[in-house]
Length: 208
Image 1 (cartoon, rainbow, N blue to C red):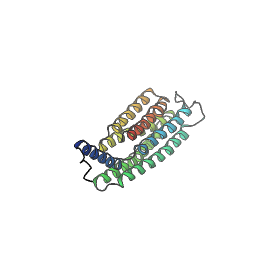
Image 2: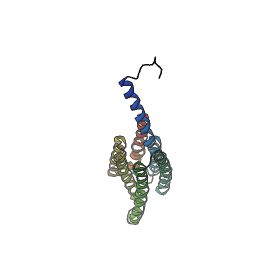
Image 3: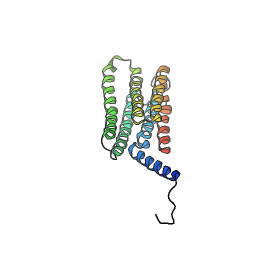
Image 4: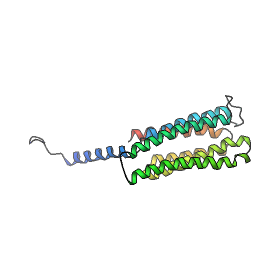
């Protein structure tokens, strides 16, 4: 600073500190576009495929000749891709920090992996006992319940209300779709569940 330059005012100092804090938080918090948008797209495509095959009545007489097995395969494939994007986001955020925060991100990623695999194993155990037309909704409702609870847990871990509220939204949509029965659960989760995840990701990225 030269003799002609005035020292920064308290307001300018405060603004500089806030900008530095914001930049630091951007490195520590996973990229919202990778954390949420891929899941929203996966749900829109996966549940949309199930709805097109099963129809609103859920009896398999949908707009396209797609079995629930094929629909579930599409859903799982798109969600695996979304999970990979989420892990990339967590690893990128963890690469900037060490210690407790890094461990927190690793544990959160493992919670998704363990939760979904455990759900799949347990659900498979009861599938032979269910009527054929309830297998798809059974898998769907359990999966989205786990997803909603994990989003709520993640919101608590990272202190992000939008993520917590997304979890609440997913659970509510899941319950309403299950209660309505038939193919409603696929339609609601594709449009409202997928749309909610994409909206959350875009909103968090804009306000990051």
